Amino acid sequence: MCGIVGYVGDKQAQDVVIEGLRRLEYRGYDSAGVALVNDGSVAWAKRAGKLANLEKVLAESPLPGSTTGIGHTRWATHGAPNDTNAHPHLGNHGRVALVHNGIIENFAELRSEVEAAGDELRSETDTEIAAHLIETALAAGGTLTGAMQQVCSRLEGAFTLVAVDAEDPSRVVAARRNSPLVVGIGEGENFIGSDVAAFIEHTREALELGQDQIVTITREGVEVIGFDGRPAEGTRYHVDWDLSAAEKDGFDWFMRKEIFEQPRAIADALLGRHDAEGRLQLDEVRISDDELREVDKIIIIACGTAFYAGLVAKYAIEHWTRVPCEVELAHEFRYRDPILTRSTLVVAISQSGETADTLMAIRHARQQRSKVLAICNTNGSTIPRESDAVIYTHAGPEIGVASTKGFITQMIAAYLLGLYLAQVRGTSYADEIARVVGELRDMPGHVQRILDGADDLYALAAELEGARSVLFLGRHVGFPIALEGALKLKELAYLHAEGFAAGELKHGPIALIEPGLPVFCVVPPRGRDQLHDKMVSAIQEIRARGARTIVMVEDDDHGIEEFADTIIRLPRVSTLLQPVPAVVPLQLFACELATRLGHDVDQPRNLAKSVTVE
Ligand code: F6R
Image 1 (cartoon, rainbow, N blue to C red):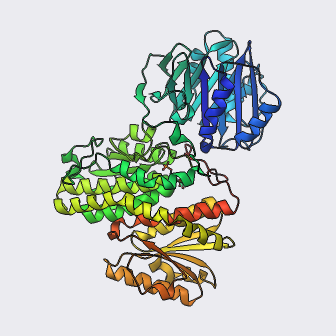
Image 2: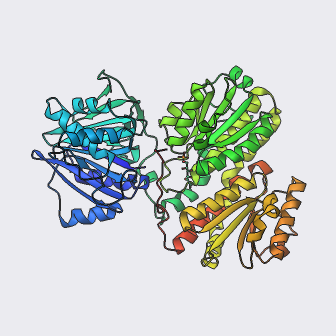
């Protein structure tokens, strides 16, 4: 949700900033802009639409050379996604240029103040008001850092701000509250980014900032203070992935690359989490075993695809631990006044670690004294920082807007959590836990087998290119997979798609079935006989009404062929783990269908990768 970049050093700032924006474009692509400090003034360019539009403008009318600059790629909140509302925004006299991610909630009141002072506002954005306020503070004397500090202490909401001052080319100043910001530490140059992808090709040394902190970068160094002006410190870390992880590597889309990375991502998610006997060790869990034994209820909170990982987790965690487990959409959670106690464990699942709805939900849970454990992919992001414990999913950077390897590793982490709780609480036998861990270790191979058959899924996408609507059916843990298959198709192919629990069919949705309607059906393994047979009956019922059935069923499960127009074979795994291989054909299908329909798979319309506003 908006990508921001800042640079000061000895390179051409425009090149560094544009390259950084390219790597952050997944965060928002409604408009893009850049501002450079040159010879006592700010030179800028901005354009609605994707970064390519801005690059075209810059190629036609190049900005003057500069080694200090900032840039922005936008997901619109205040004001339409047009040229005027694009960032950067300037102060009244064009001395300060500012880019912003987030929402300034008290902007209406500040706008009146700025207008009363006689300033002329050009855009409808909240950002422009902050630019005016910073410029006014700067005009009274002092540095950009001081002006930023004065203004930030007056702002309400969630924001990251990055600014330059025409009269001081030596510094770029940034501030953060409840919104992501990292600093890249180079030699004779320093960087600012919404995440490390912004500068990964220049440095892998990073500094994470705390809440309500301001950072000033110069060529020589980095200085951090709090909004209260007191010296503060960020946390240094080394980024353990390199540029290749942020590139497409020969794939047409990041999403397709990330689907194919899943065997490795699963292996990494499991790495170091168990000993040779299959006994689990989760070292980032800073909640004592005694506290885990006292847990009497688990509430999983998440949004979108991460919520579906939570639904899968519920089945597994309840089965292994016998602790009641609820799953809630994070944005609904705190508004319904949930019952939370000290013995409630809240599990927040978030790929980005920045989803505002999930963040607000965990804050609410912690205020009620519940313990919070995050399952997260992004090191040092806000949700794990504000949690009592974290299980990192280690999927590597996920750049495609639609979550794939993020989702699969969320499920792996949730299984690990369930098994760990079962181990600590003694609700499953050690050999049972070791058997499941062994099965999890086989998952990279199973997923690879599905990927090896990708061409069949692509052929299916070609056949179904004209479909106007697609349904997905599942039972038990196959139900969240049906929901996820439908979500992928909605967000990428812009098709009407719905996922249903197959048992619900006769209570209404069966009325949707008409001749030729494609329906994906996830058949549970035969281990759960009743479930399996009931699913087979549902397939017969919809086939009898003319549906085109695409049946996902495990190897050696025969007898369904006569009711299936297409069969997709899944490896034999135990029921609770079936979502891991079963989601992969649906990802491949959605990616291919959207590609055939000519959509931008990595940047679907109206979406952004991390939703940092509520
Ligand atoms: C869909 C998708 C979204 C996210 C959701 C939560 O493909 O990616 O539904 O899953 O916005 O995001 P995180 O996991 O970053 O909290």
